[in-house]
Amino acid sequence: MDIIKKYFPKLTADQIDKFEKLGPLYEEWNQQINVISRKDMDHFYERHVLHSLAIAKVIRFNPGTSILDVGTGGGFPGIPLAILFPECQFHLVDSIGKKIKVVEAVAEALDLKNVRASHKRAEELKDKYDFIVSRAVTKMPVFISWVRKKINKQHKNALPNGILYLKGGDLTEEMRPVQTFHESHLISDNFSEAFFETKKVVYVQLY
Image (cartoon, rainbow, N blue to C red; front, side, top):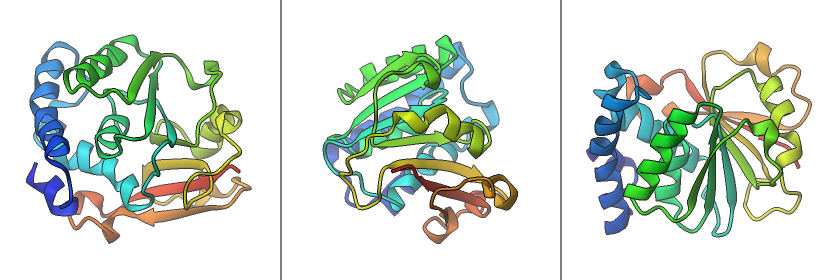
């Protein structure tokens, strides 16, 4: 938990309480439904919570922003972002039902009123959102084809609406077919841990 306070020193008492409860909650659920590798549970706050919050170093979502988390798995990056931005609405979706079961249980245990979860594929959704977040579920051109029509046209934030994608490694080839404006932000510019050396937040403008 100290690593979260280190990079986000202005958390409220309620946010600190919720972040502190995350570790034990995932420990408990992970014994029933394996959503996080055992190796990664030892680095839970760094590799899952802080990694998710790297998006908050690229954008501070304004109140009322709607965010879709595609392929959320056990709830990342959506759950940590929902704690950090309580005045924004988060919709977490995954095609694997047991993972959504964990997301719903964690959101309920933390009383996260700004989170809803659905056992669905992104393509099945009818709603529109300001931003779509994800942790490297597929190559970017494929991901864009899934979500392109799910973006609101009206902007509420400093960045125009689009995708914020957590991904690592050299993305030159993968991003070459992407026609709209995009940029990569090195997470290591904000977080000094070795785990983040090659990791990025990739922003793609869709409107």
